[in-house]
Image (tube, rainbow, N blue to C red; front, top):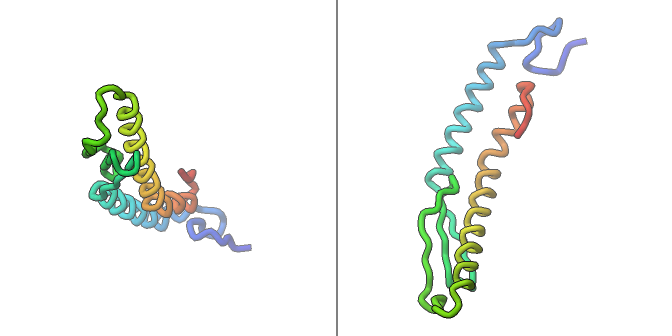
Length: 117
């Protein structure tokens, strides 16, 4: 009975050339996805837009914008909470984009006998 695995030759011998070709293709896909993530900017908001945080697709915090209406010297705690919430919101958007870009590539690694992420 012939194996349906494209990376295994009859007799159970691995087809190393085919595995290397597939690995190179996946490496190119990963590099492309990483470049797209590095260029992406995602925004998170809190307090109905009073605080806005922007992160790169890599998760790096790029900027925080605070509407002056959010600044109350007698209630700094609320402003701190809004900043944390906006940054968290932006970071979550970056994680979702990473899953979207890297998920199909990482899922394909199972075909090489490697664990998926």
